[in-house]
Each structure stands twice: as structure tokens, then as C-alpha cells.
Image 1 (cartoon, rainbow over the protein chains, first blue to last red):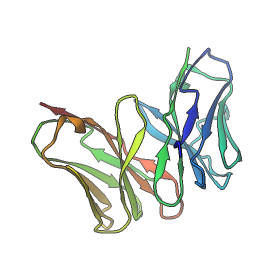
Image 2 (image 1 turned 135 degrees about the vertical axis):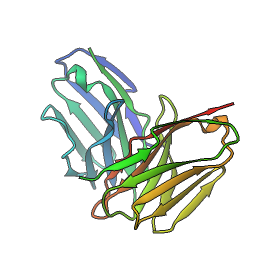
Image 3 (image 1 turned 90 degrees about the horizontal axis):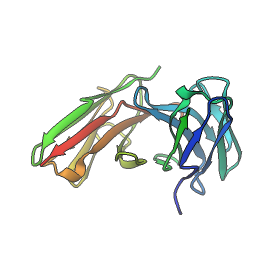
Image 4 (image 1 turned 60 degrees about the vertical axis):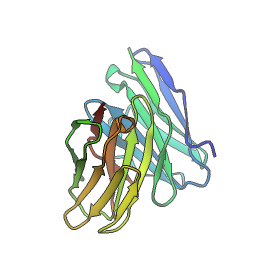
Length: 111
Length: 111
């Protein structure tokens, strides 16, 4: 398996634009997590899914953020409208039972 | 709210020396993880500790878990430059599968 695949790897966008981050989890994994990493706040859990169903989205910072998982092999994290303070590295991770495996991350810069 | 605290936040050590990184967490959990992150890279799973008293070793790294004290340690023996990275502990809640990460310890091994 190729591991957790995220796209794009880098995204630069202007404030106010919509941004969509994509994630393909490892086949067979039933949990999917979205994290945000910044120097100031470290690694924050934004939302996680179990069997494609959102379980806990209490970490989503604002209504501008939304996440979907339409099937077991694909998830998106959307920010609309984006703001400079959303600049961060966004990681997707998937797991089956114990260990979570992380993707390479998407480095988002909002100017 | 679950809090996961690591110390030290920054560690600079000479090659050949030993040191311990500590991870304290604030709520009941019987699953603790250690991850490594190289600059600009993703997170790599190092250890999974699933019970009180669990001890795992890989090369120069050894991790242990004391669930009663809510404490995990990552011990580094005879450090080498290749161990320079940021190390995170993560705790999974007993009631769910979400992973909460500590602040990270940035380790620099000096020749």
C-alpha cells in the first residue's frame, strides 16, 4: 500500500478564496483523522471519521471549515473563505485499531 | 479536556549521552504512542504502548508506560546525530479512538 496520500502537497491562495484539501486513507482503515500543525498550537485534531461517519468535529475552529468523507477511500477538508491565520500544515491520518498512519501533509499558505 | 504535556520542549545533547523525555497526560488512557517527525516531513510511528508497565525498545530508544501515574518516558541511550528530530507522544482516549498529541520535544544531537 502507498500509505496515506494527500493532495496537494503545497497550496498558496489568496485570502477569501476557497481551499480544498484531499486525502486518500490506507485501504481497510476505518478511522480517518484531520490534524492541523502550527508552531504556536502544535498538532490539533480537527475532526475524525469512523466508517465514513463524522464522530467528533469539536476541533474544527470555525464554520469556515468543513470536512466530508463520501466513501471509504476519500476525504476532503474545505476552508471557505480562507484567512491568513489558516496557514498551517494539514495532516490526514488513518488507522485500523491501534496505530495512526500519517500522510505527507499539505502546507497551506494564505496570503 | 485532555492535556498531554511533554518535557523538555527542547533538548540539545551530545553524542554518546543518555537522556529521557517525559510525557504526562491528564485523563485515563491505556494507549500511548510515540512518533518521530523530521523537519518538513510527516509523522512516523515509533512505539505503541497498550498496557500499564509496557516497555518497548528499538535501537537506542526505549519507551515505557505507567498508566497509574499517567506518565510515559522515551529514553535515549548513547545518542547519535541521526536521532535529531521532534518526538511526540500521543494519547488515545479510552472512550474513543481519537489521538491527542503532546507539544513535542525537539531533539538536537551534537557531534
